Image (tube, rainbow, N blue to C red; front, side, top):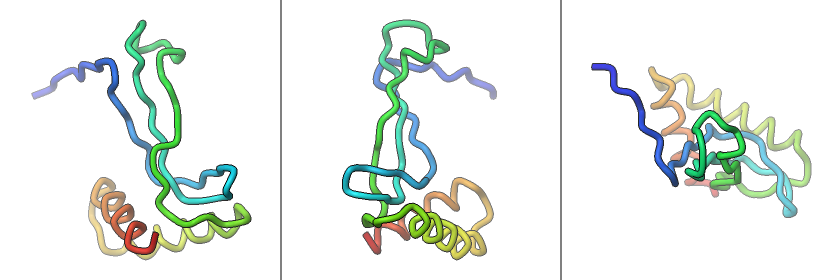
Length: 98
């Protein structure tokens, strides 16, 4: 069964965890893209890209966060079989130490 996804106003697409920066410092987080619903889905101006969630504490430099992200990914990767299971466990793991 192959259904076409109907994208409606307000739909959010959430990224995988990545290194992000705010005024408070560097952190591991996710961002989302929200469809604004004014025009065609293919028009990039119809999508609002914004931070979604902070999954770690703040750090003063990017390198610390990059190392933390790599370490956590490696710890979890050994115990999962699918990519979606990997990211679900990764988010749960990060929230325990937030």
